[in-house]
Length: 360
Image (tube, rainbow, N blue to C red):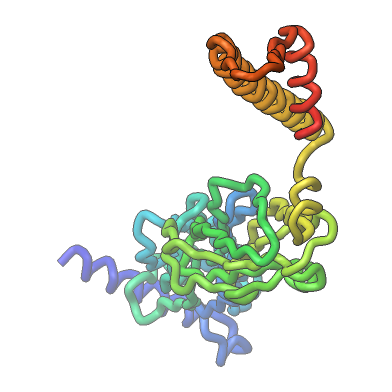
């Protein structure tokens, strides 16, 4: 009953105020207010190093011309723990025709997930010239409705543990494997390019799998499956070919990117053919060593042949000596023929060596 009595008293006082107003004020509506909020719906930026709050600027005006009004600002917002909302002024008084600026600030932590929520802000007349009129037909209000969102951002990382040079032979194919990670705050599609593909193709490289890959619908904080490019070396390399390969991953949200590069080296092609090709692969020191070994082997073989022939001739000589040691055959004849078949050993050995050298 007390609440009703206070409301009735407030209405009565308000009516008394209206009765004492000068007659030229007929047509004015005491307690009327307006609220204008400019700009687009607020957007909170949470990208590391670029974060900023979402701001809404509103102007509340007492549209009357006779009575001061007490005004209260209230809000409805279900942003949860992710987004916080603050109002610069939640209550104030305005004389007839006056205005008051109200700033509404939305904020969130860095890297917060991209979300969107509705909100509303209401300005309500609570009193006329100090007389309470809230919750009575004499009260008046103005409302602004909007949406607040956390802006999506892209942040990608190319994950390739081995960025050392790749050594290749002519016409050889290699697979370059890697993964991409989404460090942004929203689902992202990441494009992967070999950005200098034209340069590589001019050198004779062939991109078997093309110069473009894509990782689709990668969740925030997620990592892709293993991806790969297949590249084939030129079919000819008169000299060593050395060139960088540059791989770039780009977010489809805001073109955030990550780049890695490393050298691809194709060895000089060796000449085809027998001895010439073999010699081109051997250093001067190696040739000298192989030559010395070959001469040594030939010399040893030469000695073995000589020793073998000398041994054979010596054996034949011993057999001959044994045969001549038998008594000479006597021929019964008047003339006694006696042949001396004994040779000097030194002369024989000398003649034997000369004979063997002639055979060689």
